[in-house]
Length: 193
Image (spheres, helix red, strand yellow):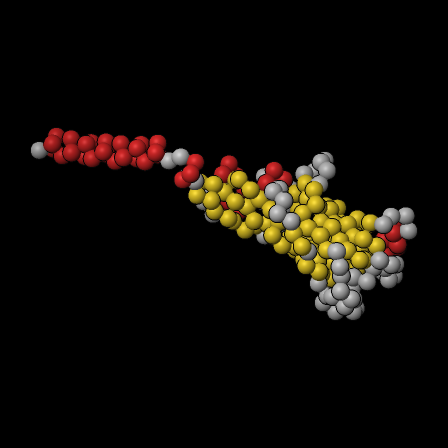
């Protein structure tokens, strides 16, 4: 009786394994499932020194106000959602906003710029443009970037991410230091069977 029970268990296990093998081999690329996962790195706070800005501004039309590395940690976010970096098929910036760090900042904190460009890449490589602002309304207390659908998966796979924020000059910056925060959100796509 005990032997008969073992044979039945073995037969049912073999049936399940055979079924899984048939299902797995019948999957083709048309049956890939694509899932989007949002990645929200911490806001990056930084200072802009008016004397440095004004000196650089006199010789350049565009001034880099932030050039740094940030931890996006896509691998951990994917792992927490049950995926792997190996499943990545696409990635892009879906949102970026620049705002004064101090909500009591004087009116028109962006008086010294007429536009801005955000670039991302890997350290030691030329970054690519992923977002831009071409017009700044006077009195704006936050700038929302227009994002491009540039596939930046190859940059998001490696942590940290190199970001560069450059602004088009508009006029001199008022004397002193100004604190800003940059918030950026990415969306990565994974392909799974």
